[in-house]
Length: 350
Ligand SMILES: [Zn+2]
Image 1 (cartoon, rainbow, N blue to C red):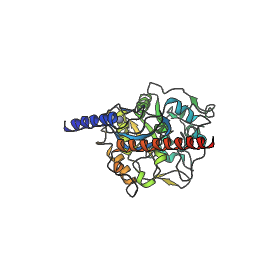
Image 2 (image 1 turned 30 degrees about the vertical axis):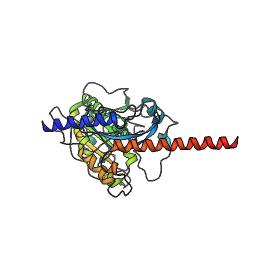
Image 3 (image 1 turned 90 degrees about the vertical axis):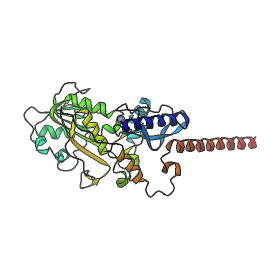
Image 4 (image 1 turned 180 degrees about the vertical axis):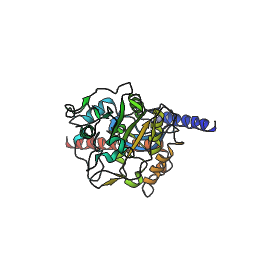
């Protein structure tokens, strides 16, 4: 009761600050996944593309499901540009920044089946006729390995066709429970509604079957410090802490088998804290969701900035709307000054 009143109070304050302090055109007023109005700001986010001349957005969070998302979400047009050959997806990245291994790419290293711990035995020796789906299967390397172990393999992939002489192709996720194993590796961070996608997987997964999810990891931000990899408003539009992912899986009908370790192997002997991989099982039972799923996201941001000397008081206090208003006002003033300077030069040259 007290919690729900507090939640409503927070939502009302948040709505008022959107109205009176600062607002980005196109900003989400509800969680793009669970639909809750209990949103909060975690940080400022310089927008990759200006929205109505506005360049300061937010890394926002949802109190209800713990999802972290770039706010506003990119438009469909901006996303289409990003994934086009002319977009940034294919461009080389700055040194030292993590890059997702790409959907389906979990086969690096000698033992591809390692990624399926703790159900490795089931994956390497499936029951006869068992079916696997790799959502975003890329060139089909993982499907090749599964097929080699006896799986009946299906892929969904819009970008390339090379997997499909060897594997069954689907355009959409089926609405009937036909799969014993579903893989969604580095998929969720690209979608605004991960809960909707996990529910689609649940409809397509047989009760007792498994789901492998891999995502960039937000709660280990103070360890890996690769903020732009985890959320950037271009390709990675949502971000995940372990409690958030566990809760989303539970809401969709998946029970996570074990919490992810703080560091995971990324193949060829390397390790990373910037990603997590979770195995979950399809269940019809009600799975408990973690309490206060937003707490670890707040902790991660505090930890990330713990040693920052130049962080403004507004940001340190968590008053991100006021901070954003200040940033935008200073930026616009600088633009006006530059324009006035140019006009003066042109005038004196005449
Ligand atoms: Zn939510």
